[in-house]
Length: 341
Image (cartoon, rainbow, N blue to C red):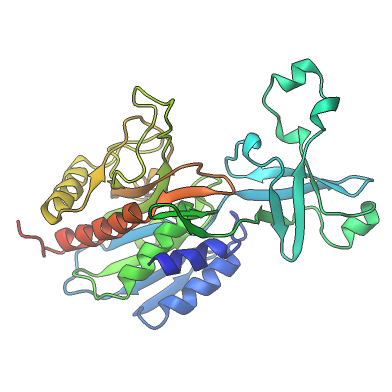
């Protein structure tokens, strides 16, 4: 699964421009799926028949898109003014490389020695930043890029330290890797494995997917914020790297189904899968849209804690990511009636 994740993280796929990710996943899915669909908005939905069926289908969902940038304007000097696609802290991008297809740029800001004392005390705004692609003038830049072009962080996926992984887009290529791993196994219950689009810009793909499939149960597989740094205390760390899979009871978009939360927690404990929950209500997932589809869907989630999320270099522990996969498998086993209880 980690090798799948490394390949997935290297692919560009900002919200609204997930084509390369979807094409690669489709090739991996095709040998195992009994049915495949791609809808008008770009969701990829793969069905695999299990040992038994439920009245309404089971869905495992993960989003393909990542945060990125979009070009808004090219200046006379050949610099690119841009906006963020998804939630990105401007502080984390200064000096970082951005890739527009084969074109590489560097995010810049006015030099510190030219900044006023007041400017140095305030957080930079997106409008203060630009991307330098090495163009001599506007015409030179226009020959390489255009307003509306998407860009992603240019950041290698690297294993380092004590079982850690550094990469862009761990949120949520991890979920995609988990789905691909589990889809290769015959599930205990008929299951739709859904790779959604545009989660980072409003949970849009999840809405159309849930309407089309009308699931009874849905497990969202995600990456979530870990702020477990030495100066963070009083629950503000949210969750901790190497603490196991994160099973939230609620977040900024969803109150998760209490019975499913308990089922997933007990399933992990029964199998010795390390787990934790969030110490602070924060963030949101595709569940926020899925649970409101049609007559309602029962939802739960499992996520890997990721430091520096939505940046060029998210950091996660391989042990946590394996725990997420094992928890998702345990969820299917329990829903399918293969648990011990």
